[in-house]
Length: 580
Image 1 (cartoon, helix red, strand yellow):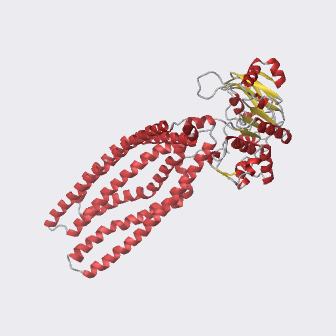
Image 2: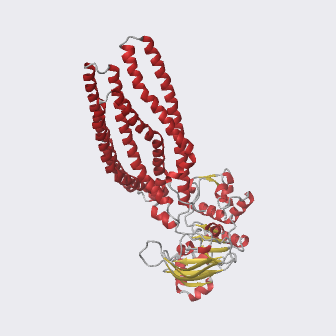
């Protein structure tokens, strides 16, 4: 299923009612706040100076009631804005994650894991916070600006001259600082990408780091990335934080001007004390609204940078486009016709060149060759992790480009060289290969994978908990769990990408025997480094420098293939137990 890209703003549409109510409630709260200085002026002029205690009490009660109403509107505004922004963020995160799941391997490599993690977490959270601020502060600030200005002018027209001077100065400071900060916000997000990439690499490669005692080196590498992020972020924060003191200076100068003008007016008996106090409060509110707008503009600048990075993911069309076929002409067959392949963006020689190979249903084909000869690259073309550059690949008699990807991959089980397990129970990890697998099917798959013995030895057996990435299991146990997960699917084709390397030859021999007995109609393609692992296969393909130089049974290859004989002899000299 493909996710249709849409504008980020459209994710707010399902929450339009909350998004509409929030600014309306904020308008009510601001309207209440704007009445407070005028009421306070009444208390001062008519209550305090006029020594009218009943007026002070009644006006004070009125102010308290209005504050309560305004407070209730403020709480409801915060609630509705939160519902809208949280729903917006949740839906956006789901669609972005779904898009990531449908990216091809080459696109994932291009974005990098650290960057995708940042975009799914930090970037979406930043945009989500921006939405909440817009629904609340983007209404509050302009209303205070316009309402405060009007109320101030009703008190004294001369106060308008103060506004006329101070507001443009504040706006100029905000515009200058935000325009300089815009490019830096994008740079900050890229620095976070780098920090996340280093963290992700170190957590996933923790055992290797400890084995080679490279903790200090990795600490230095993290420290370098972290300092780079800190320094870039510090530049942004220093620039943006310098805005507030400048705005405060302008605001205080405006307040002084209001008091001075008001004092002259009071001395001329053209204005009362309460009006001056109200004017000061209105001017403060107007200029504070400029500061609020400054904060919003900062958030908008940061949010635009984050939204652009999210949009890059959402608009990335998968390089591997699915076809429409959901069923094959035959079952379990694989064919390569004149296939050549090189990894996207690579400038070197092709990894595979002019491959011609046919695997029949129920056949066991082994692939052997030196490291880097193209073995894994060849089998990666079968489930379309990558597409061939030249030539054609067929599965079940249908070109892989014509297959619906879900239909294609649902008939293939792939056991990777590195066993990937998930935190959860043994049962859950095996059932991950088939959602509706029964307990009996899970046990049968474990028996075929030679995993029953160690599973039964666990305190909770099939309900035993497996730590993240299978950290609580040995290498051989993890491989057998991964094999059980592949077997429970009962696929037409099963691919082992050097995924039995951690098994002893005796266990591996039992595994292959169980596969032959229980999955007779399943096509098995097995990559291995050991001759003992492949010598009993129906055929063995020998790959050299991206080309299949020989493909036959063990006995015939011993007669016809020099490379195969050299591998055999090398393992014999190194003490390899060829007979298992």
